[in-house]
Length: 473
Ligand code: SF4
View 1 (cartoon, protein in one colour):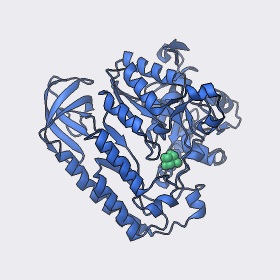
View 2 (cartoon, protein in one colour):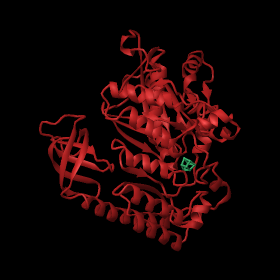
View 3 (tube, helix red, strand yellow):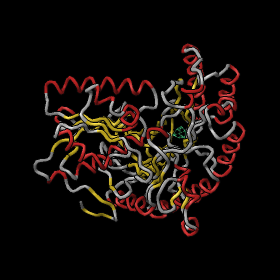
View 4 (cartoon, protein in one colour):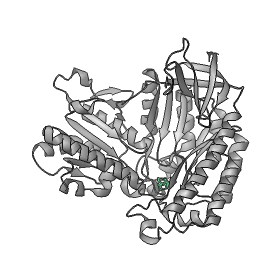
């Protein structure tokens, strides 16, 4: 391995003549995609070179998601596909990583669906597991770790545009929301050493990247006190407590270390977001003015059943504070329609909250019960599917209305856009995002990928701002 800014970087895999080819297929959240890049770095060290073509791979790893039943069904279909491919190409090895690996453990091996199973804390063990596969032994490791953050590993950027990258800052979650599998699949919350986070951002800057997104299941809960689970902080020494770093401090450190880089973060949990974080955002131009703030429901009764640690009122107060400290800040949400026992009145509370916030955009889902969660064990999934669907449609329609209103607010204004790629709908246009995280498209002209461009908005859809470049920023 070579060392760069204190990070361990996979040796140049292209130089490894007999490199085997690794294809990683990631599903679900950004954390999963980011983990895929850590896995590519670990396996790069034992001679695997990443490929974007599954049909030339020696090893296929499905990096899986268990958050919803539908996600698991899609992965089951992909496993069936690779099972068929393996019949034609017995040399091909197939492994399952991520949350589904953790949830289904050796069942996947017993079903002979895969050769290897590794949970989110077991990726350093992949070289040994591959050896076990070669030796015909069971290859499964789904052990949880209290300390693993892959802190010093410099990820191999997969499918990268060379402009934006993810940097992981925490792993796991302690919140125990009653509908969520994450605390079971990803374990207890741990924070990554800030020195490694900063070093990774520096390497990205030197490699030409212009934007980083600090990632974690609950970034606002970040707490570095020398390593270990967050819940053990109370046992830390007085010195460790006195020198501990929270998310506001980390955000400021990153903003100051790479002042010309744009910084985003995700995901925030309403109960953990502090005024200090908002003030740091306000103080640094390079921190984007957008916050993803999942609310899940507008009903206090449902929030309590979900074990969310805030109320409709405290959430509104937080929104007011954001509006006060960061006027114009983009705010997005996650919402679940049809959670256990949800009534029409609860649903109306959700719509009223949406009207209060008028979110810029959101991710909206019908509730699906996940085995092993508190909700699956203790609450009846008793809202008929047709009702879930109807309420979800109402939520989506309301969001479209609000997104449209938010987009129209930008008409005639100049947006600073970081060019991230070619527009999916028009080869002749670039797309990028403004500080509020809205997609902006404009004619390419002579601008290049990675340029900062000022774009005057002349039109919009509920999802996209459309404009013309007025010059380099
Ligand atoms: S905050 Fe709640 S929903 Fe988010 S990962 Fe943690 S337990 Fe799951």
